[in-house]
Length: 277
Ligand SMILES: C[S@@+](CC[C@H](N)C(=O)[O-])C[C@H]1O[C@@H](n2cnc3c(N)ncnc32)[C@H](O)[C@@H]1O
Image 1 (cartoon, helix red, strand yellow):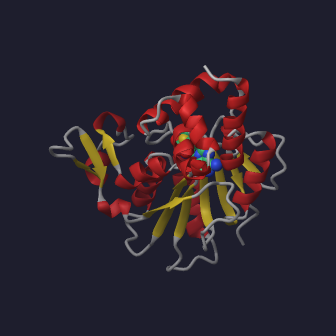
Image 2 (cartoon, rainbow, N blue to C red):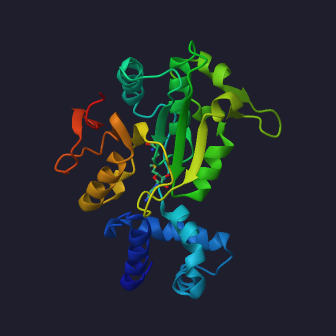
C-alpha cells in the first residue's frame, strides 16, 4: 500500500492546497487515484509519483494532484428542491425588490461546479424563468479547483443517459443531439452556454476574481470534505460575495449548525445574507 509517512505527506499537501481533509479511511481511495495519475504520466508507480511530488518539479504537478484527488460526482437537477426554491422564492423576490432596474443582471455562482451539470441546471432554471422577458440579462459564474472538470464543463457534452431532466421538452429546447462521432451524447446549446462563464478558482485562494456580487451562490457537496474551522472560514468568504438579501445554498448533508456565519437560516441548507432594502 503506502507508508504512513508518505500518506501523511500527501494528506498535508492536499490540505495546504485545497483544505480537503483526507482521513485515514481514505488511504485506499487515494492510492488508487494516484496510481492512475502515475500511469497517465508514464511513471513506474506510486513511489515514483510521490518522488515527483517531493522534487523541484512537484509544484507543476499540483493541478494534476488536485484533479486526481477531488471527488466530482454530480448530476443534472441534483437536490431538486434547491432549484424549486430558486424558481419559487429567490427569483420572484429579486424581481420585486424596490430598487430593481430593467438593466440589472441576475447573477449566480456555482462555486464547485465539477463537470458542469449544476451550472447548466441553474441556466435551464433561469432561462425558463426569464423566457418571457427577453431584455432581462442573467449570468452564471461556474468555478472549480479541477482544471480537468472545468474543461469538461466548458465542453458541455454529456452522455445521453446522464441527461435526466424533470421536463422532457427541455431536452430539445436546451440540448442538441450529437451526430457521429458524438452519437449517444447531447451538448448544451450555445444559447444557454453563452450565459455561463468558467473560472479556475480554489475556494481558499487569497482573493476571488469576481467584481460583482452574486444574488445566489450554490456551494454544494464540497464543504463535506472540509473540517469545521475551514467550513466556517469558507462561509464567511462566500457571504462577502453575496448581495444584500442574497442566498447561499449548500448541500443537504452540509448543515452549517454550530458555525458562526451571521447568515439567516431560511430552511435546511438555505441561508440568507441580511435583507434586501
Ligand atoms: C462532489 S463535486 C460537487 C459538484 C456540484 N456542486 C454538486 O453538488 O453536484 C465537488 C467539487 O468540489 C471541487 N473542489 C474540491 N475542493 C475545492 C476547492 N478547495 N476549491 C474549489 N473547488 C473544490 C472538486 O474538484 C469537485 O468538482
